[in-house]
Image (cartoon, rainbow, N blue to C red):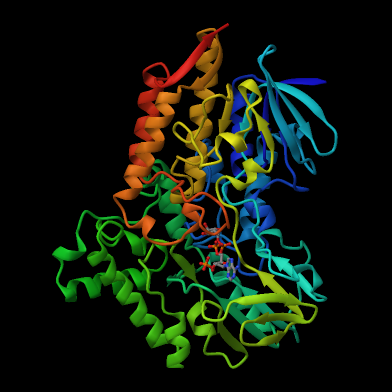
Length: 529
Ligand code: NA7
């Protein structure tokens, strides 16, 4: 059995960054990656239009200024192929590939209490041990395909956006059905519609989306950012979501209607997720939120020509409660003669048939079904691994009522196990790359501290964990987030406990992590060597 200092599960942005950090400590490490290449989310999500909706200059690592200076992004929002090229560049530039084993899914990770080591087993039969086990398994990596009756009977092409083929999928001349209208669907629908003979969009909940206003990146803008990259990173780190949303302290309810309209119009024109940064109370006050929601509803009514279709596309919930989307021509697509919107909230999908699908009211003949039905977010990928801590307790059992972590980075009863961007950390409510990097830095510093202080094992105390879980919920309960059924709450997966999983507030969170470290890892139990 091979022994490593650290096993890292997952070769996406988190695993790659973590490997670089543990190498820096002089540790031996092995990364296991289920895919045939690195990249995680950006390896799997190859659907047409897949692109990041955080600006490319910010969706990148900052651990090496040389890397920041060398790499040139070509668009305001990077496309999936470009992000995949970037992560591969990083892996080669820092000579990390040798420690990454692809095509290898981790099956189990069991803590051997007497040896104080993690025993990790892969689906391909590798068995290794490591002092540290670091889960870099991703927040949105476990694809969700609803268990529709007859799902496997379909005779045509069935795809999930999060597990897309590597070769181009031709939709020309095909009758295509897209199920779902979340971020992935919103990016894919306009492009599929351009190709398909006919596109049916099966919508259960309408989505708010703001135009991305994507464009080639101006070399002048790029030069200016690179002249003070640290300045951009610093500004971003102080924003609630950890990227530059141009968030203000202004309150919607203190502005006049004309001022609000002008502000929203300006943000709509500039495009993207900073729309939510227009006012500080948008996610806290329903009255404030209604002003933003009504602005977007007005835009939908103005864009979509058929009033009935416009009405079906118009959301009624709180804007931002489910993730705000950012699109290129999404609502406009419903003006095309070859696109039909099907409201499956009124007439749910009853079954998948050999030739298409049937809703309560009607049968649809399809050549291809695209499931844009999301992920078992935050916990799904971890639950797919048999993780056992002290006393043989499984993580699945411990988290049966919802995930419990301290700082979203560790969980009591599982010594020397770290989770990158786990539930209870800002993760999906932040710019993922800086959040990943912050965790990788924090974990490597913690491991370095353990070495210096002759600490053999570290795990959170139950008290610290309980207090953190309560705090994460308290923060969420002070917002409008719990008012709808989102995947932040796990409510997209039947039977999953309804618990708000991400931590809201990147700057406060980072400060808390710093304080914990500065106080000798307060809230953790440290066992000496
Ligand atoms: P999302 O945002 O979870 O969207 C999934 C969509 O699929 C959403 O519109 C769901 O409707 C719909 N859905 C799920 N199950 C069903 C069933 N059974 N019937 C009909 N419709 C269904 O996933 P995405 O991949 O778009 O985005 C995930 C994240 O990736 C995104 O937020 C970014 O962070 C990147 P619902 O709203 O549940 O009614």
